[in-house]
Amino acid sequence: MTEHNTDPLHGVTLEQILNALVEHYEWSGLAERIDIRCFKSEPSIKSSLTFLRKTPWAREKVERLYVKLMRTKRPL
Image 1 (tube, rainbow, N blue to C red):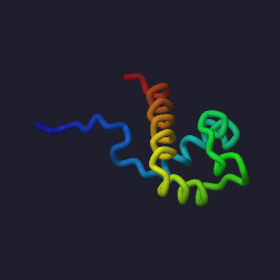
Image 2 (image 1 turned 120 degrees about the vertical axis):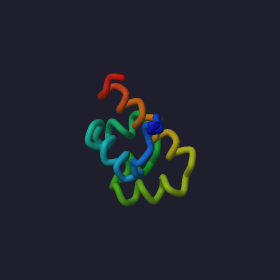
Image 3 (image 1 turned 30 degrees about the horizontal axis):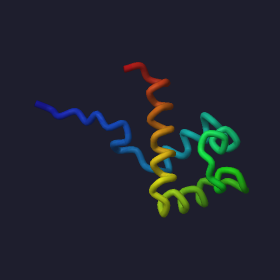
Image 4 (image 1 turned 30 degrees about the vertical axis):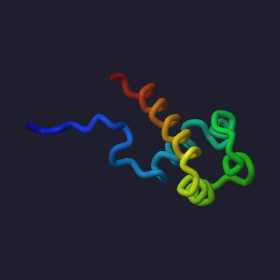
């Protein structure tokens, strides 16, 4: 029997998550949904990744938004 991982974040890097969110919402939409300065003031993937890797609560919010986005894109 093959075990199927149901975790939507399994095998997805933080950079892939952030790129998908920026592609879908753009920086301004992302900043509206998650109030983090690195999304508002001169946002970049590199600076955001640095912040998110050091800040667990912010990373959790980003991951939750990504899971929500993926659920709306792919019907279960």
